[in-house]
Image 1 (cartoon, rainbow, N blue to C red):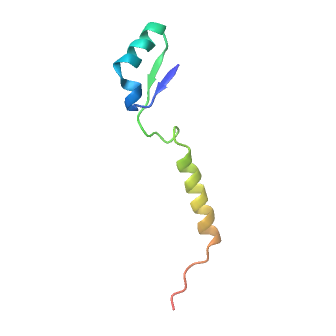
Image 2: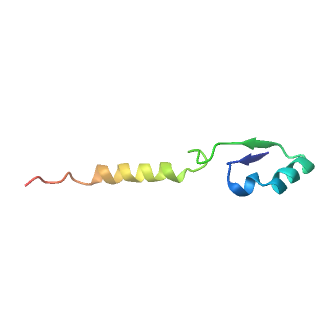
Image 3: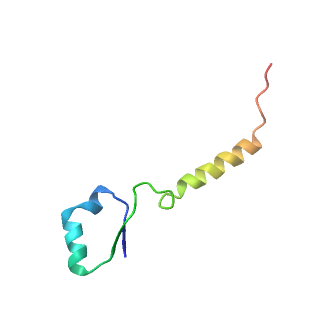
Length: 60
């Protein structure tokens, strides 16, 4: 199974043709889906941990 994330190299005619000739199943997914980019979740968790450790600013 080939999961296509709509990246330009994956949509070229030569890639599509080769997948059909070889008989590989093709599944198109939307670009930039969160499950394909887990680093976003890591950054969110890191930010939350830093916010938890950082004292609030003093208004003096």
